[in-house]
Length: 164
Image 1 (cartoon, one colour):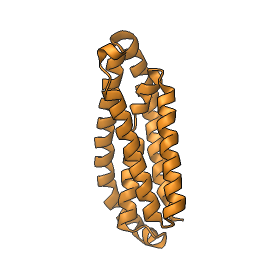
Image 2 (cartoon, rainbow, N blue to C red; image 1 turned 135 degrees about the vertical axis):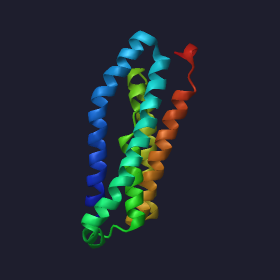
Image 3 (cartoon, rainbow, N blue to C red; image 1 turned 45 degrees about the horizontal axis):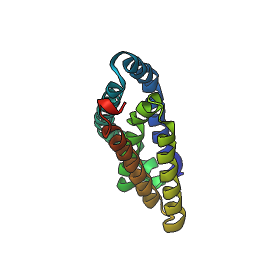
Image 4 (cartoon, rainbow, N blue to C red; image 1 turned 90 degrees about the vertical axis):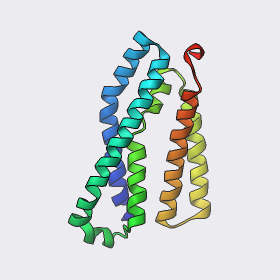
């Protein structure tokens, strides 16, 4: 039940990201054509940081309201504060990840797939080997999401105008 409730939030974050992607992806493609590939990286990073700030602010406002309305359900499903905060971080990270758009537009799908496969494999090994508790699984998932975002950002930031 706890995973179901947490996944509702993550599912909403994925939905929000897909709606925003329908706006952002064509804009990034247009910028690649008109201003060059470096601008795609800059714009993608800008959208990621803006979404990160907006989603964090929004969830900080919504979480107390949800606690007030559904507090008894949170307790029933075992959603303590640690799990709620970890789920919130996971939702924010998942909903604000627009760095992969730049890699797709720049025809670097292999890098993106490689990073995702590596982190998925490591996370799965950690989850199946080291833990059985929901909090620990969420911590591993959050760490994997943070590492994923940082790896994408570092990969994209190491480029300059000449490398494209």
